[in-house]
Length: 229
Image (cartoon, rainbow, N blue to C red; front, side, top):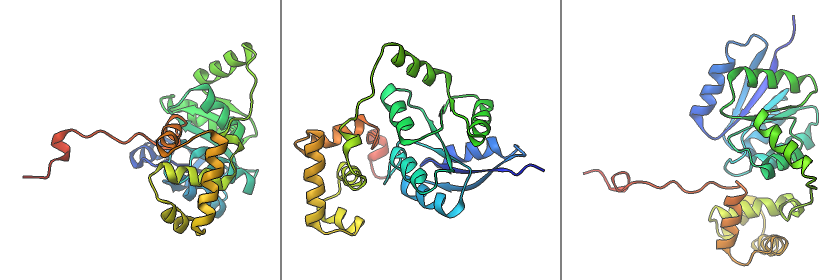
């Protein structure tokens, strides 16, 4: 009897994770062995559970899907990562592939496509949703050359500091979160802003939003914000 493909599901939306589990539960050769609701938890769960395939969202709290993918594969290159996302921009696709992802599936893809993608990457192949593939092919035909972006030149620690700064944390809070000195965090901040050519926090937040490192805050209606009468 063939062994089941062990899958780790990383997405910060509980309802979406429940939907994926409902899709996979009737698949006799695929098993969800764990879940993570942020990138850092995904890295830890991958180390603990040794999944065959990781389904990874991009825009998650604490650590982005890009960085989580890279860390998972650095720790265990045998694991295959499929990016499961709603984004189909060329830059996002390139960054995911550059991080080492073996698959790229859009969240509105048919159920059968996801099941097929899991099977393909588990066997050592690569899979990409047709719309995402068209973007890559179009870029290739145009002769676009991949160059290192400022973000790609950041160290892992600088990326963590960037994310936490964009989330609104003060240097002292970041230092406590990362178990570093305030002086060290400030040095990382100076270096990352120089590499990205950013000059204040507002530019930093705009940069993080554009690159899907953080989400735009939700806008609530007056009825939602007023206290209950």
